[in-house]
Length: 129
Image (cartoon, rainbow, N blue to C red; front, side, top):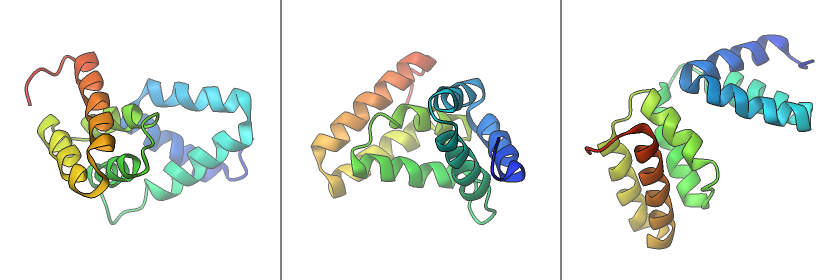
């Protein structure tokens, strides 16, 4: 049971809106392993951070993708690439974001990120940038 059902439910709504079933399935994996972690992730990450009003989802995903690439957190990148596409980022915007990051975080991270981009685009049938 969530410590804050209102924020948890809001987080589930946001997650569902952004990525649908894959997001809910990812949370279910964490829920089964350690429910408190799933609660924090949903309630805080999506119920508080992503649901704030000053930035829209596209802007938030731009920030998230940049942060993940900068950290080298490529395991999470595919999830957020799909979310970014779902909330309106174009394939060209995503590719340009990776190119821009190369100047600041280096080509090794940018190449790893671009490989993730290519994999997500292939999975989604995106052939034009």
